Image (cartoon, rainbow, N blue to C red; front, side, top):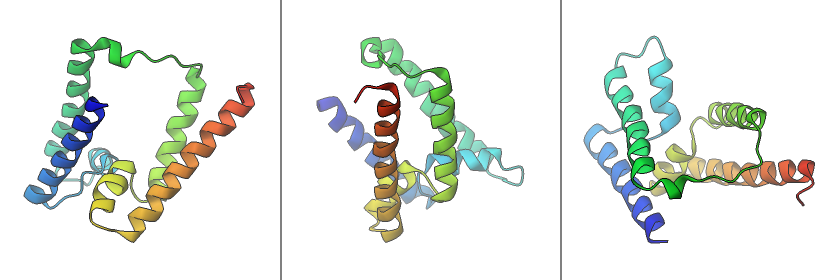
Length: 137
């Protein structure tokens, strides 16, 4: 539980630093979208941000590999479908859980509140549907 508290605090501090020093919201889908947008002129910091997420994850896997053991019955096609649904949801919701859930809620955005509730409800519903289809429930 202490790891979750520390992780949550670090996410909050990181988002606050980003907003304070750049005036930008730390929404991963928006940051990634800027990398993929050919008209974007600020790809440098965006690439470094995403690279930092990847490198940070790799460092943690090497330090504490037991924390990353996943016992899943999901197939590769399940992951592809989930990824496509998440991508569609971020387009539809004009942002992702990090942008709306962390940054938007902390700014008391009613739009982010609705988006976050919708993300969570659909995540729960999707999990229930997949488990029902597999006969796990």
